[in-house]
Image (tube, rainbow, N blue to C red; front, top):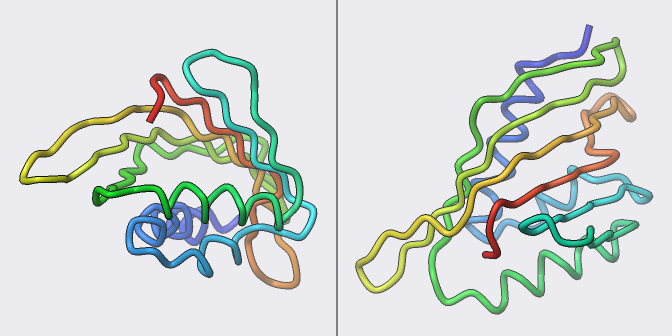
Length: 134
């Protein structure tokens, strides 16, 4: 069966890595042909196919932020589990800290297709449905 403890750690660490600017860690979670699909408040999906497009998304978003973000990943559970793949579903609460104020920006749900590739767990497909724009 999939190493759900290791995968839970990776998903939690990905949130912290984004918050600290460790984009190299985040990008290492994706395969060259991975897909990141983002749906904001029920609008049409934005699809970022391939590691280069995913990198551009994260770099662009990170560069425009003036606040400190906190990605709180919680309520993780797994479905469709095999020895080399699993679907991980988790809740995101996105918090902003700026000018002494703490604000909840959005919440959402990640649905991740995680695969074992060369001995490491990687995100083959990440779908994030945000409840509000961030």
